[in-house]
Amino acid sequence: MTIAAPAPSDSSPAVDGSPVDQAGRTYQVRTYGCQMNMHDTERISGLLEGAGYRRVSDGVDPDVVVFNTCAVRENADNRLYGNLGHLRPTKLRNPDMQIAVGGCLAQKDRGEIVKRAPWVDVVFGTHNIGALPALLDRSRHNAAAEVEILESLEVFPSTLPTRRESTYAGWVSISVGCNNTCTFCIVPALRGKEKDRRPGDVLAEVRALVAEGVLEVTLLGQNVNSYGAEFGDRLAFGKLLRACGDIDDLERVRFTSPHPKDFTDDVIAAMAETPNVCHQLHMPLQSGSDAVLKAMRRSYRTERYLGIIDKVRAAMPDAAITTDIIVGFPGETEDDFQGTLEVVRQARFATAFTFQYSIRPGTPAATMDDQIPKAVVQDRYERLLAELEAITWAENSKQLGRTVEVLVAVGEGRKDERTGRMSGRARDGRLVHFNAGDIAASIRPGDVVTTEVTYAAPHHLNCDGAPLSHRRTRAGDAFAAGHAPKLPGVALGMPTIGQPTPPPVAGGCVG
Image 1: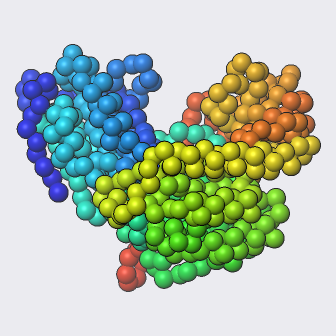
Image 2: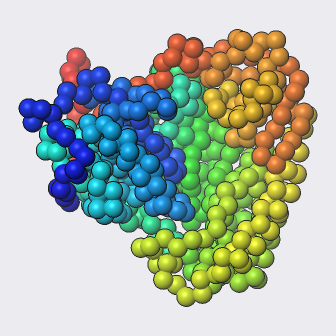
Image 3: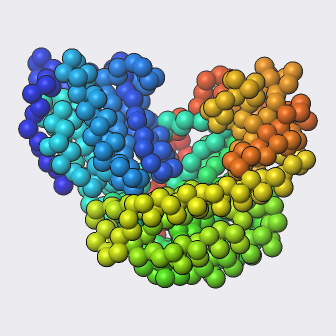
């Protein structure tokens, strides 16, 4: 669907009516939402830089501002339109500045965005990220807002060029879209049915990242462990994890987020038996009440969920298990909420992402009877947080005295400068703040430090003794040199029917 909106009064084309040369033009991408949105931002940045744009930091007015939006989080609409409103005076002062809106909210609101904010130049959806540079050119040339929303995926996002944000860790999308019909979720309507990449294509991207120095990859999917459904292999995800174990110099593999209904024993075995797959599992619970799970159309029950956790811990006693929980879903009773607290007590989560249910227009839950009063939802939410705080603190306290291997990160510890610490993630995903001691100057993000846990808090660990060891890595070298991986589009795409495409001739072009 393409909509040509009227030209806003505060925009102007090039003097001769031709597109402005984007060489030297600058951009910023402002991202809201999940890891999938953040990964899409890497694609957007790669596309713009491939078209000649240059990224600038916050505090500088760029020539192009791209909002990569989320429609799942609470108040997503208000946040977007509020930020667009803040940009209007800048746009009035500089009519050549362009504003683009993409992501899930753009897919949902479509032409409504330029009606509510007519100073927006481009609106693009989740299925046509690759069109952004052309839409910016077209908008400048035509002095008109360009709104282009496709109903299905144009190309798999991983075929697009990428500007990675990290030298040491990278996301790799193995699927997009979702075949589930959870009543609270609008994602399937905005990202479409699940599309799976070929295993060889996923592994090619992982190898390309490792060749650039990346030590850790996270396999991404809206429902990551249903991978293989499109090409008929129910065991494909476990096989993919094992194949990642064969990639030299890949030290850590994570994945998010799996669905309990698709969790199979072979995945647990692959996690336990593949040395570079981290013993970390983020598995959304959403509710500990079978009645609420049924109303949510979550096709598992609490017994099944806890059974998976028992199997994971039997195979990997050191596994850190995290989750998502929604409080106040329509019809939730106090007994239902008590069921959630009971599952939390049994599961002993290392951490949990908790949400108060709020209406999302376009979802079945939005029109359900028995919407819970805000005060009740808030009360349950606070009681859940208190229960979780006690459990996560107790679970983290079990780490006291243990030696942890920390992949040093950027920006994980907001208080690091004040406390003199550095931060990173342990293999199980826990956040670790550590004393770098006398070797602080030689430790770079991307390096690996081993150290001993001396203090535990509900959401992090401290290691206040001197590091036991420090390993310099290629990822740390890349950080020091200022080189984040910048990959071209990986020559990949969607599964096809029939004979596979023959490999390129030696010396030929790779698309």
